[in-house]
Image (cartoon, helix red, strand yellow):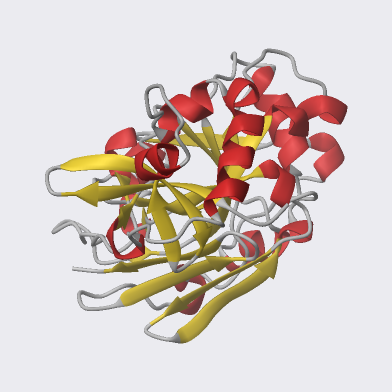
Length: 299
């Protein structure tokens, strides 16, 4: 079937669910249901993610039928984050070249496990919204990452079945205050919370693309440009721990829930590796194959 994605847009003072049939063709889901004489409540993207196996075939059918409709308003200019995930798990130093540029010495994969931290739901913003540089930081940095959305929860998920638990994929920009990741006032050298969890530090979107359109999440290109200059250009096959391995690892610690997001790591090309950081007025453009573009200004 043809590509589509699950989106959310802002209309006046409320947000509404939508279907993206193309990057420049996004339509209100309720309007689609009305035009197709479909009754019942209009599910939000968060509600769809919370029970994706129950909704998937119906949403796929709606998307196909919507392509034949005329006169639907395009709301692509008003798209916001698809939903606000309650839990964002992020993989650190999951690309060898990125670890090298950061001066991180990694153990052999056979002697290691994924290093995971969490970002706050209050850090989430959508496309077009501004990343705000904190007054306390002079080294705010970018990290484009493939975001996997869990659609089927579980505990102790085996690697070979891990991808069956993914509902879809999006883009997450793991914005980081590098100078605040470090502490000298405690015996602990790193402070991932302080460096990663400022408001606006998790641009997410522009939508969620169902997993059926990404048959192999380890064969996806990802790029990030600042003011039109490409800074990152990598591929997910460069990951140390695959998405399936990350899911298995996380589920060995806690029960994954529908709607959880896994930010799977970033390739090299971040600002710290170059000695260049974001400034007010910059524009970041993150792009991932099959998914689309997530653009955010900086202020």
